[in-house]
Length: 304
Ligand SMILES: Cc1ncc(COP(=O)(O)O)c(C=O)c1O
Image 1 (tube, rainbow, N blue to C red):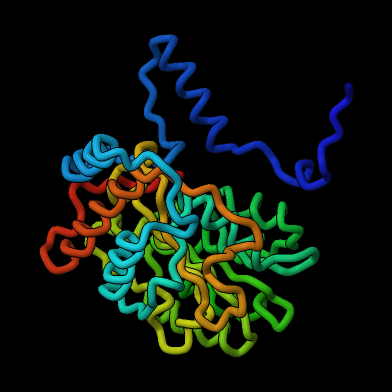
Image 2: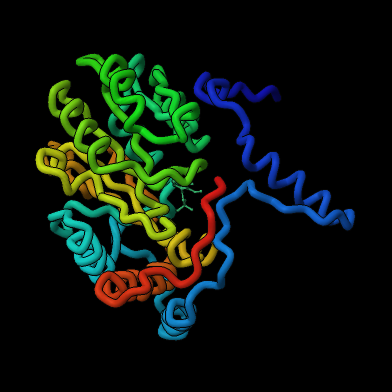
């Protein structure tokens, strides 16, 4: 039998990050001392309270399906966390997904159609391109690399790129791979452009706890952005839960006509209850840590 793959499979390249990671693993297996900066693996263990919450959930028999958009306690904890970031959302605007990547994938699928323009800020995390292409989008790029990876020096170029034809702009601050945290002035200009051209913006804030002393502003907290920003965040980087806890959050624009319970027209596979309970523990300590510095146990540089 000859299996015919769908066209969309041909549109994406294999992940360069994973290729490097696999190569590093092979070299390490051969005894080579490798400094692997490929996948974004935090350099500290998952906090003990999170591990304990996961174990307790398993012991308590929380091993069955959950509501597909997240257990209510976790969504409430996420609302509190977002409130601390200046975002005003209710639980029905939150979707918990099996990973930040899944949240992003669903968002691209929900918002981008064939030929729609997606604007990326380069260098961008590798998966945005694949997700945009799989959704049928056409990518436009603004290059930040010759400006210290900051957005502010290229705002004019951004203004020339974003137009009424733009469907989606992806902002990732703190950025992977550069680590740059965009200034408030730059984010305000993004807001002005998004409002002027009626563009939806993904604000991927998964590295918000890895800022080395620089305060990061959540884009959706700016006036005018609450109903046009899809905020992506999660636990993998802030709580070193890259494997153990497949739960992340996403906030839909409040003005969307699609209810949050139907992120892209198809249900998401619910992530395990035990993982969601670990995430609840993480989110609760996350929320508390907003008021009790230090916010973050042991930062690691973003690398993928
Ligand atoms: C910028 C960025 N966003 C989102 C993700 C997805 O994170 P996860 O699926 O592990 O929650 C990653 C992972 O490396 C990332 O680097």
